[in-house]
Length: 415
Image 1 (tube, rainbow, N blue to C red):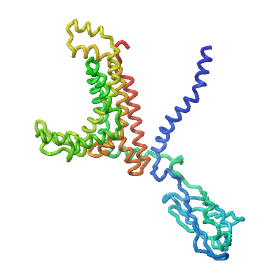
Image 2: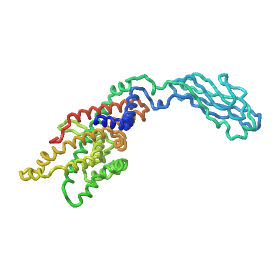
Image 3: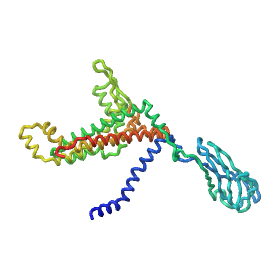
Image 4: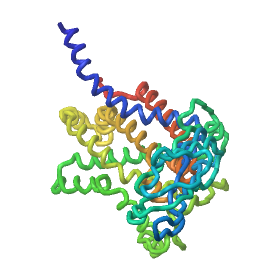
């Protein structure tokens, strides 16, 4: 009976599982498909013959001559179109006198078997004829029916020809490895900064004091605010010409000249004669990332702290343990589980982050990450295949990281 009930439950949930799988796997499979094809942005529309119908001449009385003209154009400059056929309905009151030899009229039905047209082909198809009174009294009779053009063409998007050229170009470019390093730098330090700030804020808010609820609400402000609003605020605040932060630094004598935090790639300095560079723009973006997303860590860590039994803290205090020792040996082991989950989620979200960097720097000044590279390859350069290849790399990196992290991540004590 239990087995039958189990299979009945699976059967009833099967449509839901299928819909979720289609929603999740559909775009993923499409991205893998595009990544192994030399697809440009223009290839999203298959090659077709575009047609524009118009009436040439100005007939004023019945019996005047007129020309019905079709302007035809192959939308593709790379692919030919085979077996092109134009079909339309001749306007009422128009009597064709001459037409191309590949066209025929049956009643009012016009059929033109054009055949194969090469890439970039353009032509004009003209029907010479006369008009009657019914044609003259109608309002633009040539627009009463839309011409239909059919044909067969190769479509790189739907063909079964595959190539790894996108990945070969991707991995052979020095720029890709630089972008990959920047992505890991941004993700690791952004994730770590958000967790450390969240842990510090949770430790503060775990102590009872007057107005604690109001302060907790203030801590949520960076996370609940619209990203475009807070990003614009940071850009204005750190502006080298009119920003408040630069003004404060120059007035205090910390710096002699304003600093372009989001536009300067690096600051050079030396330690014991060794020249080094500090990635200024990237570090500023990381600071924004940590500030904006620490409230999520703060909420989860605080909820876990409040569920810890306080008896062991009282016993540790009686044994002479300092607050730091209580945190290190009692609180931190209890928080390892939630910290591991938060690190995994924040790593994935930060690695996929696009809007923050794009709004702050546009990927310039050494802040270009893989997600920004996906956008630039796919839309700025109109190379969807290369953009999809970068997206596949992002997917593989995240799946590998998540698998290894789940396998070796630390667990809370007692679990």
